[in-house]
Image (cartoon, rainbow, N blue to C red; front, side, top):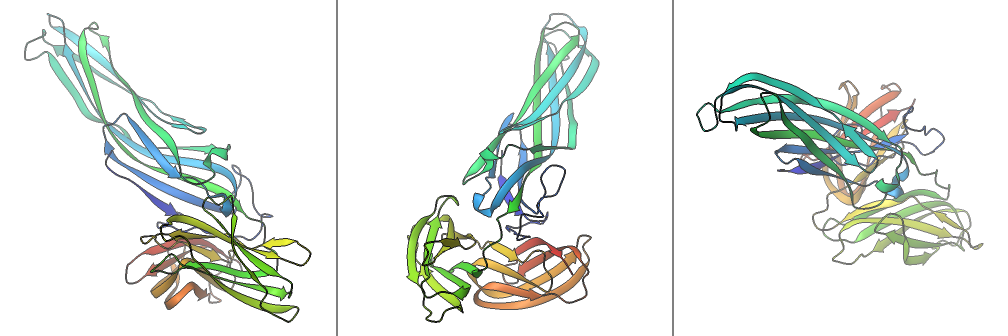
Length: 397
């Protein structure tokens, strides 16, 4: 195996993007038989390899994203086989062979199997040790972009941090079916393919109205994280607890501040600087807990931040469905120019705009009144690097 690489896709378009298209589980249907309100997809490409067993590794689904409904696996594989036979008997004979190969992908509730057969011969093979005692069949393309799909309903193994593995195995061989059994037989298979795992999920329940906005953005030159949130109907007895997690499930307190407003019922905005360990890397999950005088707590949305000096930005968009304006929120402070495009599912461009961002984690795109309701793709391209992030959005007029 040469290289295996991932591309996180949202809406079947490349570059990493987690998308939260709806704010309620009420419209979230089950799978299969319906389309859940959102999907997270990962692609994996297997370069040409002669190994008979390969491991396919995909990231697990972060529970903080929502409720995982089902997992669907797709593959497109190709296989070229070269077979060889050598007569081991001391006399010449007429031989025929049957090639049978079975690729399979298994593990964690997945069981995809296929089979192909080829018949070769009759072929004249001379006595063992003479120049004509051997023959070669192929290279023969026995699978050419063959596709398979399976939906997995048991989702427990796919939740959490780290990766989940599947075994991609090629079994079978060449068998004589005429001319005796005394042969040296060999089969070499070259295989490659594309694999996709699709996590279909329902977003978290709608947030309480106390939280209007919550952003978490890492400073591009350090791991320092700038937290900002706003609340409606502030109470002077409120306090706010910052909670962090490295797996998206277990959160621990990391800081606390009291209400900074003396007026009851005010709209309040807060800023907080969280300083992770300098050596911290990977994904960090952050949420805010509002504590009232009655001891009851309300939670903000969970935000994911990628730590480390080489961490690339990750994004979410909201609202989705969108009516008049869509917001792209990064987990890093951005600086540069972004070209935003809104295109139809058939590739027709309906909006193109360049927006300049300076030390902000927010990009806002007002939508013109023209585009009718429907599904679109929003592409955000950072002009200096060319990095492109894509989203599937639903416009609802």
